[in-house]
Amino acid sequence: MTATSLENTAIVFGAEKKTLWPTLCCIQSIIEHHKHTALELYILHTDIPFLLQEITRALFQLERLELSFVDVHQKAKALRIHTHPRWNTKCFMKCYLPVLFREIQNVIWLDSSLLVTGDLTQLLNIVPKDACLSAVADPVAQILRQNKVPISHFLGSNTPKDLPNVTLAEYTQYHLGLTNAERYFNTGLLFLRPKLIKASSINQCFTRAKRPYLFPSDDILNQIFHEKVHLLPERWNFLTGQLTENLCLHLPEHWKTHREAERYHKMILHYPEANKPWHDLTLPGASRYQSLSHKLEKRMSHFLPALLRDMCSH
Picture 1 (cartoon, one colour):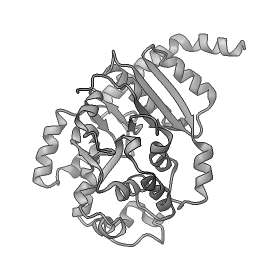
Picture 2 (cartoon, rainbow, N blue to C red):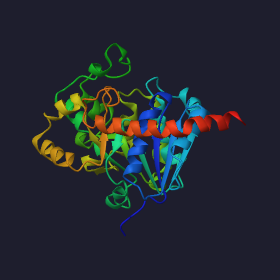
Picture 3 (cartoon, rainbow, N blue to C red):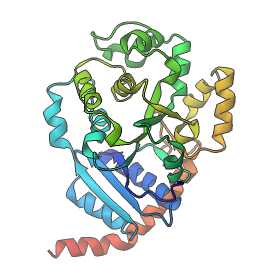
């Protein structure tokens, strides 16, 4: 049966104070593509003050939208003493999703630095019913592997001593143990069915948190789910940015041709580089970010004075 709604689907973000506004822009992009769809949204965080949470909820006070903040600070802090220094909160959040949303049928994780440009209900129709996790193969990682870039190139003097001094291709093959490097997926978009994810897989995620990784959020999930992941078309996590687009010119011909076809059907636009569209107006889709941001600012200017007066009177 074809899904026509996002019923029993949690759409989840991980945000802190400094990334909250881009997250809100992403939420606005979802709303504009799901005008008649009930949405269940969650923002996982460790440091967003109560007042900011109240303002955010008021900003998206729509009958069809339920927005919840989930503070994971204590759980992340308790785990921190058992993890490698490169392990970060975002990695914890992604690995913790199957536990936190165990009773939810579908979970869609979205990084803050992306825009939704299509209907997310289509994901429910194209992912096989027996797939526990779905994601998109990472074209940039493919380029860096085939060009034999050493992993020290990414971290420089900050490279942990317990990471092997090898090329990214060797790191992927020997340190991660991936048998097919082209299946290395990007975790900016994840589609999970928590009930299908075994407790042993979740435990492995946290056990491996003690080890050194180049990109913990991606590497650990790739290690655990390499043979189980259902790879989605690139449109569901289309990476872009000046460096990204330049690198992708050197993809294998079959991948490059496929990527250009996917560009015109993109459902999610992702900015993985440090240069973000809310800072650089020359990036693809930056004008869209500006438009979403202005809409939120305008809406906020109408209700914020009244909200603050109401809060101060209690």
